[in-house]
Image 1 (tube, rainbow, N blue to C red):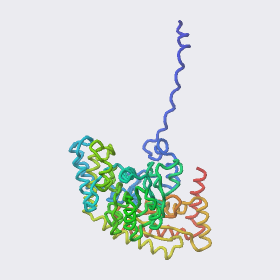
Image 2: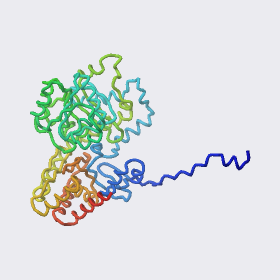
Image 3: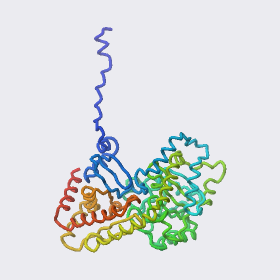
Image 4: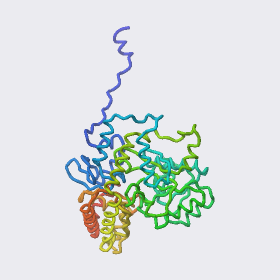
Length: 471
């Protein structure tokens, strides 16, 4: 065979691969290229496409050195503030010790100590603790435990509830836009109106409900449990052989002015409490489910079932060390009391805006968990702007507030949920009076700008909608 024939019969060389575009250190470009292009698009549209450089306490700094007040706290993760030095130092010391972790067939010391601390917070009324890596994992645990403990398969959710986005938790989600793209729910669920005890009693009536799972303050609307609602709900559940489960993933650990939000209702006595978010100070994913011994005895019912439900990373030593350090900070810095004092100051100041701004319908709060709800204004011109904004997009009006709060006043806020005219504030519990007064002044300034129609704020809103439609 000649050399020319050998060459002709050889496979054609592959063309050189087109190199991936390089984005250096642009986080939004990397997000767009590799993770979630549509989220990157939204960040650019609303002006949130910043390069964050540093964080401490209630503040973040971008790469230009501009300071921002964080009123979102990582969706409630940073109750103790970002990069708290006490927790950071505890984790550095733990890492330096080279302590073993995740041996799995072991009795981890730090897990036992953290469980002991958590039980003391509820006066040892809930005798067992199961550790998770997230809030939705805690909800999935509660679902499994409730089924095992009761032998029942039906669950009750409240309208507008949010308990996470994994399969079981998603079925308990009261917002249809989260559920619908993912097919039929994995659970049999009945929905009742939040704060409606009559509806709850009727749903419990058939005697087939494993658990009623409820948030003491709903994260998606900042709807607050009415006085006596939680204690009466617990009583009704016990009468019907149903477990009463409180989701404290966002409300727990000082957020509402008590260590747990259900404690605002003196006689509320849950069978399970689900925790996460603020439990590690934002350093390590960690969560916990506190539950009754009677439930434990049905789940872990024999020696060969001692690990029938478990989590690989649930009792990781670093997570447990973070949890212990976070509880130290919350208690030593008296953050629940701080949340009550500053939450009342912020809530009262924002409520005063109702007297001079037609758009503000309601301001409600419990500790430092606040919702500012907007509604149609009285005057014809402003109502025209309101109607136009809602025809373009249900959440567009809130963006008219959120965007200038960010761009002009350097504050990070969020819409409380899809299809609602509510902005939620859940700042770190370490904010001070100066921060509170600054927030009130900023909302006053932005909302006053919206009282001019047409005006610059409305032009910006229209431009945002047009850009979104083009995209």
